[in-house]
Every structure is written in structure tokens, then in C-alpha cells.
Amino acid sequence: MGTKNRAADPISDPKKRRRVGLSKVDAGVEANECIKIHLVSSKDEVDSPNSFLLEPVDLNHFFEEEGKIYGYEGLTITIWVSSISFHAHADITFKSTSDGGKGITDLKSALQNIFADNLVEKKDDFLQTFSPECHYAKSLVSNGEVLQQNVLIGQNGDSSSHAQAETSDVEVTYTPLPYITIVRFSEIIMAALRLRINDIMMSIGSQTRSLVLFVPAFATVTATQQAFFYGRYLCLSLYIDGKITSQGESELYPFLPLDQVIRVVGAPVGPAYCRLVPLALLLIDGSSPIDITDPRWEIYLLVQKATDQREDRRLLGFAAVYRFYRYPESLRLRLSQILVLPPYQRKGYGRLLIEALNNVAISENVYELTIEEPLDSLQHVRTYIDVERLLAFDPIQQPLNTVVSRLREENLSKKSHSCHFGPPLDAIEEVRRCFKINKKQFLQCWEILIYLGLNPIEKYMENYRTIIADSVKASVIGKDSGAAGKRLVEVPTVYDQEMSFSMFKSQKGEPIPIEMEDNSTNIEEQLRQLVDERIKEIESIAKKVSPQSS
Image (cartoon, rainbow, N blue to C red; front, side, top):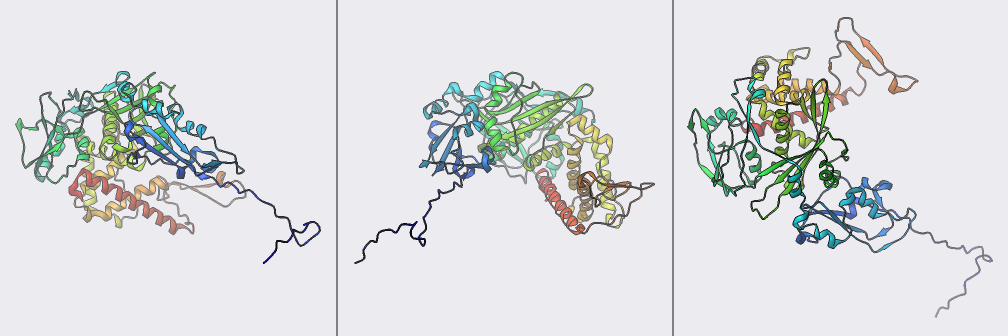
């Protein structure tokens, strides 16, 4: 049986070394990994595993030290955000805390950087925010202006009617409407009527128990699309030449609650927006809070009206808009932030907000409406709305038809230089004046209008791809991708590379022969990918505007 020997003195025994214990370095935990945020609309949904889970853009950037939280073992943070009052409560659990070399993260301070005064410390106090007197959307109605849904009335053949057309507020009553009647037209009839439907004034009477919705025979109507249809095509009867027209089979669908867009200006902007800042920071990529002390900011809120008078309104989404002065006596509207709450996305509510802003821009005759760095999804909806409006706009039809005819008849592959297929300046100005669409946005819509005109597109795709390629090159490389006139060229230098260049200028604007760099193949490949992406985007919008273009 072995015996335990007495430990030798490490000093007297050089073969023995003293063992030194090193504390474990705290690697931290990423905020994205330990924080879950839920959007709840009632007390019962708090702590429920079935509550709606938000997917923030990135939680890490709210925390210092590379987005990590330090000093906690087994950390879990569950945050409940009320969709009624937009207060929040954080449930924080962990096994232990210890300073592993980088301190212990102050979680309360970090969360307040996101939620500010909306963060409620005690859970019981947070549950009280679901009481009726705390309903956020309800208070907004008294502080804001309810925007009526306006429909332009005018003949498409009158070029001035779009700018000076009479508008009429749609009288909307909130009597529950159980069904929408879907009347389907044949494709031929719908093609003839499509351009006229947008100009039909809508009116809903208090005694109406069902509504008639006119759609093409090939259209698919789902519950999530009804909000979109409501804004554009809903009417009691469609009169063509004084006669009520209806053909095809009718179908019944449940009717969604009606919605309101409320504009908040002046002093109420601050309290209204402060409740929404956390959602903007969490869900809008690259967003930052607006300056609520600047009176030129406006907030537009999309509020759902409940079908029962005992119920309260719910906020579906919002938009922040800034009014820029334009010399000498005009204004520009810039949409800086827009968000539809995640539970209501992909149901047409974003379109309703954008259309409300379009109506404001037209009715107040601002210079133009622009969007600040729109995401691809927002740009898609925006372009779809604008193309739909431009399809029936008379002043651009003649130049558009001219371009389409040229692309049908010419062979661009045999031309040594790029040709101009853009809209004339007077058409650009008329679109801006009537629809408040800026030049850059109109040029994108113009490409889609050409695509729709080249039917069947497969027959003319080579020509169409050529003009899209020229457009992409102009936006990436410069206006003159053919290197005519002036040309800036980087050259090797011992000085600051960013501050050094050489400029070549021809005598009469003829092309300047300049040797391409070794990576010219990569550049061409990148341009080809950009052209493919652009055409794919155009096809996607064209199919929605005109399903027969697919």
C-alpha cells in the first residue's frame, strides 16, 4: 500500500517548480447571443413561449468592447416590449458575476441606452402599462391630424389634370363590414379598364354591408393583400360610360379593419417619437434618432381602427419626414425613417404609408418627395407604386412609345457608341411637377416602363440589356462610360494617392484611348453581375404591375 510522501521544499529541490494559478480570462458573450426581445400586446403574452420574437438588426453595437457583455456566467436577458404603450421590461438572469479582467458590464445603463425612459424596472409596473389609459395609439388621435384618403379625379387625356385635379375626401365610417365581393374581369376587359380604375372616387356608406372589389381574372386575392387593394381599387360600383359594369364570378372574403394615417407636427412630435425610438434603433438598419427639437420634423403614424368601439386602436407603423427649404419659395419632403411593426409586415401597410406621403406631397404642392438611403425592400415598394402611377400618365406616353419603337426596330449590338434612350427633360419636369417624383427615381421607373412596352420582352432582350448595361456603367463609372471628353486617371506617385490624379481632355470631345488596368476582366464581371441584378429587380416589379409580362 502506497504512502504519501512529504512534499519536498521547492527551494531546496531545484527539480520541483512552484505552480502558479492563473485566473481565466473573460471572453465575454455577444449581446446577440444572450438577448431575446419579444413584442407583446397583452399581459397574457408576457412570459408566453408563443409571443412574437423580434429580430433586431444588430444588438452588439449597443455594447462597448466589440459588442460583448462581460462579467456574467449563464447570462440570459429577455426583454418584453408592449405594442400597446411601447414600454419595455427586461428580465435578467445569471448564475454568477465576477471580474475576469474586463470588468462587469452595467446592464441597466446599456439597456437604457436603447430604451431610455421606456424601460420599466418592475414587472408589475410594466403589466400596468397594458391598461386602457396607457394606450399609445389612442392618445395620438387627439394630438395629431387624421389624413383623409384622397383620390385624384381627372381624365387621363388631360396633361394638366394630374396637377390641378379636384380632390375629394373619402368619407369612411367604421361600421364593421363582413365581406368584400370580388368581381373578376376577363383579361381583355381588364386591360381596357386598368388605366381608369385608379381615377374612380371611392365612397363607403354607413349602411353598406359588403363592398365590390374589381380585379383581373388572373389575379390572386389573399387575406394579406386586401389592405393593398383597399387603398387603390375599392369602390362600390364601377361606372364605365354611365353603366355599371361587372363580368365574371364573384367571391367573398373577410374584410380587414379600416386604417388611418395620422400626422403629428410641432410640440407633440417629441413625446410621440420618443416612444418609437427603440424600435427604430433595433429594426431600421443604420438608423439614428431624429432631432425632436427641430420643428421641421413630422411623424406619420398608421393606426388600425378596431371593429368594436370598446377596443382601442393599434399602431401598425410610422414614418419620420423632414421638410427642407428649397429656394426660392418651395419645400422638399424627405422620408428619413419608415417602419411597419414586424407582426404587420407584408400585408400592404408600408404601401399605405408611402401613398399617404405621396398624397401629402401632391396636395401641398411641395417640390418633390425623396427617400433617404432606402433599403432594397423599401425601394421595391416605392418603385412599384410610382410605376403604377406613371402607366396612365399621358405626357410621357409619346416619348415612351418612341423609345420602345426604336428598340423594336434597331440592333444596338451593331452600334459602336451608346445611344440615348432616356426621357426628355420636359417629361422629367412634368413627372416631378405632377407626382413629386425626383429625376433619379423617375429614370429607374422609366426603365421598367420600357420593359413593359417591349412585349414580348424575350424578343428584344438583347437590346434591352444593352441600355440597362449603359445605365449601370454610367452610375458606377461615370456619366461618360465611353471616355469621351474629360477623363480622370489614377497614376503612380510618391505623394498621397488620394490627392493625386491626371486629367486627359480631348480637343473635340472624341473618345480618349486609355489602356485598361490588369483587373479589367474583374471590373467587367462585376458590371455584368450588377446588370443581372438590375434586370432581375425590373422583372420582379414588372410582373407585379402587369402579371402578363412574366
